[in-house]
Length: 269
Length: 188
Image 1 (spheres, chains in turn yellow, blue):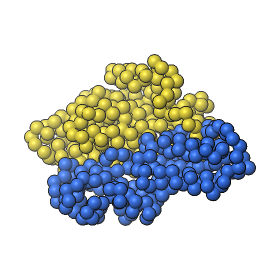
Image 2: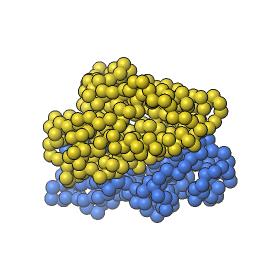
Image 3: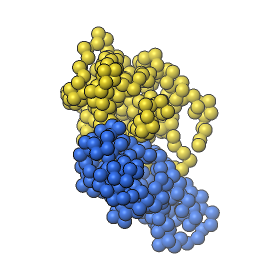
Image 4: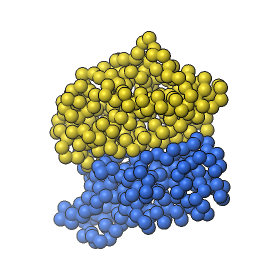
């Protein structure tokens, strides 16, 4: 991702010189969610239902990569390891990734992608709005910027949910099935873990559980307009992503994403 | 974009006394890599520029339009090239805060965008996405009709997609002349 041209840091004043493990683990969770979902969205190129959607998926994927890069670069500068964004994206193994299971799931049909994006963007909207008041100045700067972007992502998914839900009988059924598919993965987005509790206590992060009500209400509004029903809660829920315990598709995703830099260490464009 | 605390080393081949006015003007005149009719200064991407003649360094501060804007690397490279040509060491800093807004695009640049076929961002926009009716119908329910077609000037235009040819643009269609066009989407 980085190139030969080097630049100086724009780390805003107020950020910690060396951050604690919980602080950086919390930041990695945010960045890993963005990176892994951007990879999944990039898989839609040439597979979306129309050219405009190819471009939309690529744009949204690019926004998420940008967010991940900013956070990785920041983490590498404060965790005492001096790792670059590339080190963090390409040279960590599965157990070191802290993303939720939702974003690593295989690409399904278009309705499934819109259901996933709707929940993820609703979560990120609340997340970045809250982090716009973070005590960590660099995280605050990243969040203020990202919030403007994820509003567009949310709007995009919401429009498609309505279009499909309130469309033909078949598109309605597919969108309804997509909501059932995504349901078991939603709770993990809003689950607190030790790192988010510590980050929230320090005024750096936000407790994920405090974001749930607003996101659920936003999604419920979309479903109502889309003539869709909220699916029954699933009997199981994904969990463990924040601790590095992932589902089966994650290894395959990393193999594809990481294989080039690992096969050709130091390769540059 | 690299935020790490490292400093650019631009080779100084010939130690010439730089003409301050000339080098600063050259950096300001660097065109945007994706929209070459406007400069990085007029788009508000170049936030600060300072020449340290004693140290032989040029300090530039740039900010991305969107987090993932791929043009940032090209802009850094272009600044480095200008520095090299003037025998200076270039130090480029990427700064995220305050976050870029389309309100920083100057009047002259707006006109240049329009002539280039890109509708300039609406200055009054509240920075939230304009609600798009996907695969919009002509004369559809797009409430925000303020954006004028850069070709024929008609305000009867429809958003086709909030995601256009680059991260900073949306795709519109003019319902009067029938042409599709890019719109620099408002971000405040």
